Length: 251
Image (cartoon, rainbow, N blue to C red; front, side):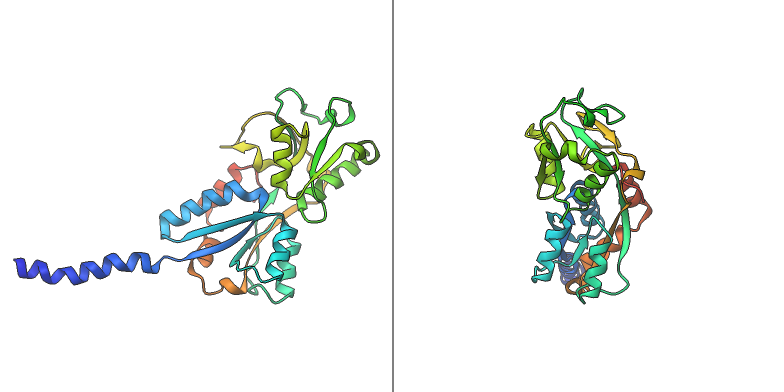
């Protein structure tokens, strides 16, 4: 009996070693608005496959510049559709890998539970000194905010009150810390479990800004990275789509 058990040890050792050897890690560039969903999805990936994800957050424009300059990313989760398409044109992305993983929603938010009304009328009053938006040149949610302000006819009135964040993440922090009383941010930043985490918000009507199609694309560097490929496939699964919806996105 001892001999038979002993002979099994080499096989058991190989099985034990095989798991970690099969796991891979992907370097993923993620638009700042998708930070929390990305972390949740990465946790599911690790639990189900053993693969891990290293997430780098930033504005889409900044992430694009880093990829063009050789940053070692395997996958991009963008806040727009234009940037992944451009990466394909640049020869830096795998052809045919691009798809829309979410549709973003813009909200006006304040950390003060009584400041923002359900119609956004606060924008027309004098109840605030600073309004934060993301840099419209590099952050799609910033561009959407500028478009919404323009369609509301408030560009001139709000111009002196505007402060810009480099990304939508920094923009949220301006409002969260009180450096700006209100901010245009992504709905995903202020929801948890489908509910407002705190403060007050106005959901900006979607006819006030162009649709925020958020595309993912596999980069050439990640073509043979099992973790990156697995994450891309996971984003398409029904269960993960429900996770994405819970953060306020459309699919």
